[in-house]
Amino acid sequence: MHRFRPTEYEMKAHSITAYPAKSTQAAALCLMIQNNLDPAVAQFPGELVTYGGNGSAFSNWAQYLLTMKYLSTMTDEQTLALYSGHPMGLFPSNKDAPRLVVTNGMVIPNYSSRDDYERLYATGVSQYGQMTAGSFCYIGPQGIVHGTTLTLLNAGRKYLGVEGLGGKLYVTAGLGGMSGAQPKAGVITGAVTIVAEISREAVEKRHAQGWVDVWTESLDECLQLAKVVVYRAVTG
Image (cartoon, rainbow, N blue to C red; front, side):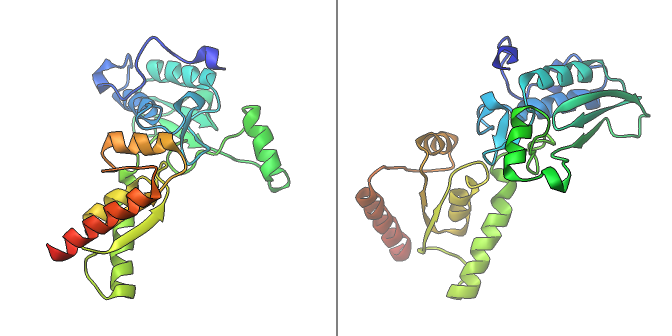
């Protein structure tokens, strides 16, 4: 299905007026879809996976092209129905109805094992849309920064008896789709944060985006940097 992957334009959220749509609401959906597949946003954009390892916007690029085609012709008197990335067609509705109705991963219990899922996903029959991949409203790690920050602050209150984490060392792991919020939450709370990550690509991506200040492959260098920063935070 990679032969259907568009190459004639940059995959990103363009200005809403740039989309050839009859409905502004439909154009907004086009913008959201392309933002979900932006290489700067998506985890595996070529595979249509937005985040979480398997949180898919579509099962294949043919579905993407068909959906964008439907959205370009939709009016405010129509609604597009999608099932696991499959556009089921435009249906008559009204201007107060949703422009898009989405369902993902609907399978019956007898066929809902992991092996069943892998088979259904591989054949393009069903997909796991996570929370915001299949609904096209993923906004990157920023969507979880607030909750992660509150979790850290409450951990400090409960276990350390402090209101802020200034001078405290916070050790965690993961710089993937949602995990990328962890170092930013550490900065907000004042903690010195060490994040372990197995994927060099994920580390470099978060560093380039400004979510990570410094990265190293050396544990000794990491610990030395942490000691220096913690000391500076404590001594002012």
